[in-house]
Length: 324
Image (cartoon, rainbow, N blue to C red; front, side, top):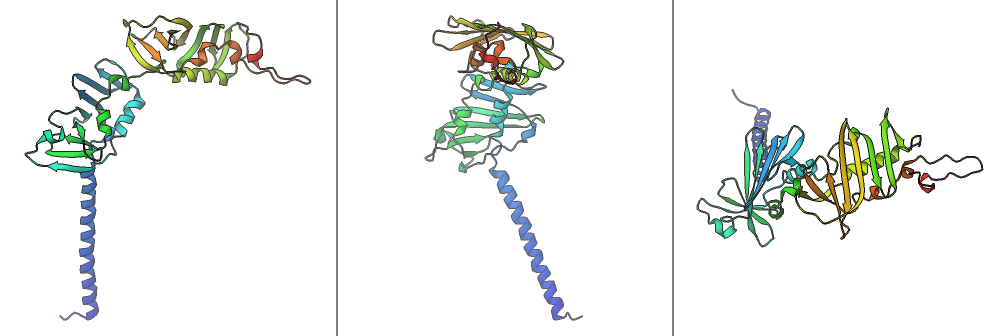
């Protein structure tokens, strides 16, 4: 049977179209593979539930538990969830900048990987692992050399890897003064040079206990509690470590879900502020300005501003005589 010219043309177009589609699919597969090969960390981010940092004798182990992230070594303590998540999230999108060398007989010493700066090991809940050995050396573009797992490749990566492998437990430790949610606080007593500030939550509203009857601005109370929740330490010391002698600035007692919590805050001669918390087996040196709001606060600072009356002006509660 003879084919007409139009039919031959159609078949030819289909044939070339098929080849073009096949080439397109193959190109897409190659591109997908290239992108996958360029990924530095191939583990599923959602499944990463721990990592270890080894540098010399130093070992830091962070694991996920039912309450979030926690330090397992060199001490057991809560971890700063945001700091841990940022550490992992910043690595996930990173790409291999280039492969400096690939050889089954590599001389690792040329790249400083025979005696590396340290290693970082990531683990997933499914049992997968990925280990990065980080060199102290850099290339002429100031990028770092890394070996991934047991690959016979020297990878060129962001120089940030050298600072990552030098992170300590304190970089991931939960340094919040109050580690619970402020919504759990039902009562607050604060004693400073201004006197006693004692407030309590009653049916969802904050009220003054001493003296009673003072009308409080609920937003100001929330701002005070928010400042407490945001206060963090710059350093954490063991309970037995000897700290500088301090002048007392204030004491604070909280009632949280029926449990008591107290803090004793003092200032050393160098003006640095230190805190001892009743439920923590350690002491804290606070960030600069972290607790300034509590040093001279009084009940008047939390009072509702009186409404302006006819022929008079409103008098801010903070300008009134301190009732404490």
